[in-house]
Image 1 (cartoon, rainbow, N blue to C red):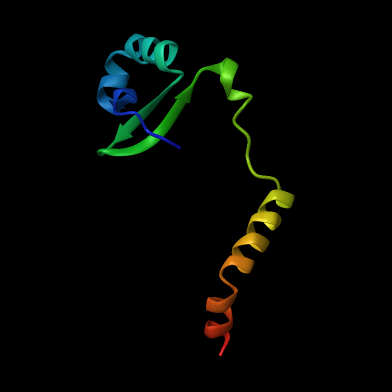
Image 2: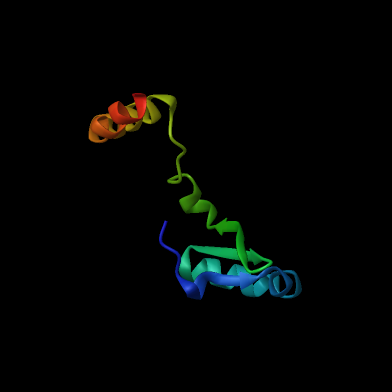
Length: 80
């Protein structure tokens, strides 16, 4: 996920000015709220939230297989 620094807001500022957070989401599609200067929460426009999908077990298996094939030499060395 690419993070645009214009989409960052502190927890304190989000609590004090939620309408600003809502405007930022309207303009940019999402906002990241920082807690203790670390990304903690992601707020996204409801209309685009459906496009955010989590990996299914099948896709995790496919990715795992690909990574194992790409790193087969290293896995064999570690198995010794």
